[in-house]
Length: 248
Ligand SMILES: [Zn+2]
Image (cartoon, rainbow, N blue to C red; front, side, top):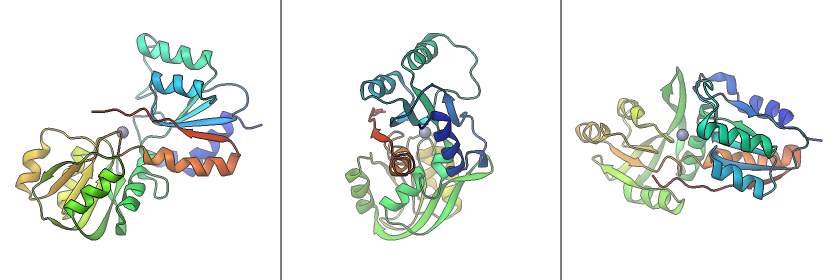
């Protein structure tokens, strides 16, 4: 019989969850009891995801953005309703935030580098004294990269202030606007992240660098999806990706 705790122990080790400080409480955030026969995989620990997971017959959810950040202070309002729903439906929640951004095999950024077929991939983007992204070399154009991202359901809001010919790409999935300065420092022609902050416009313009905002959600579906075959093989459980897109 497979339990949530066994899956937790396996994933914590596989994802090296203690290698980086994080505001997310990574690991098993909400326990349940009994056997895990089916695991749902999703980006966000929101009520809609929980309801879909229960409808699909899951006993456990693995998410990138969990429920507990910087400790849980109050259990009221939407937090109360979510925890009540999880306990009443015996649904466990495991979260892996920065460990799943930075992982060299299963991480969001490793997957983005693979989609873009980058070569000579190196760690990039320091956050809490650890890198969370990757950078790599390519011989392509900004237009072709945008086409590839769009084919993979990502957005392409672009600040095209750099060259059309792209040789060096730096990546930080999700909310990585502040790492733009590091992309400039390493001489990237293109920086790809999920969502934009106001300051990026003039910073990109004055440093002649291209920036693509691929969508926070859309750049972070990859890590949890990469875990599906791993857990299927290890525990012989049913699995399903639960797509609840965030359109902002
Ligand atoms: Zn994120």
